[in-house]
Length: 215
Ligand code: MN
Image (cartoon, rainbow, N blue to C red; front, side):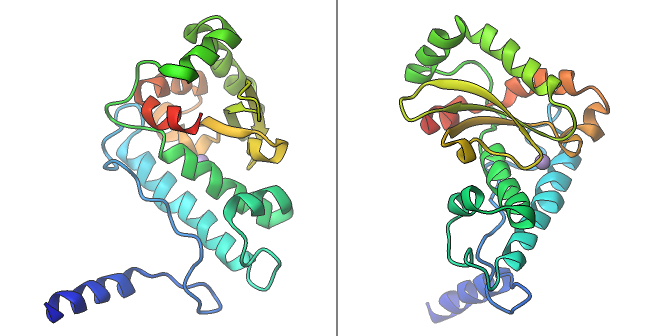
């Protein structure tokens, strides 16, 4: 029994990461709810490994180091995104964005939303297909790097918002429901310049059960 406990303890301590100050890192890399190869061919294993393991890990590390000694040191992620600017905003925004992004997909995804979210989408855009068209158009129309979001306000009213760079709808007092990353790092290896094709393919892996819960 003691041996098992010690092994577990060793496993935990080996997996802890430390910031430049030597403290245990406050924010951690979100765990993928699927294997890195599970979303292929919509998103390849290589893209997931780089996007999650390298790009997101860098945002997490940067954020943990940047908040040391600031008023954000003990704040939660969403508060930091809402109240910060500059480097802290860029890195906290990207951590929040990617936490939402990577947990909204499933190899068994696709199909349509259900329940209240489905009703709200129909009421706002007429049909799920119309919503998809507008969402894709917003993503294609965003110049440079950024995100397209489905978001809701305090009354549950839905909207599509475009955000440059690290932007997230929480800065507009909206709740993010679904987010497509249109930074080239999210699709360039698999689709090169064909952002529109990539966005169209993403619907096949959207985990509507996870997305419905956010609404
Ligand atoms: Mn990204």
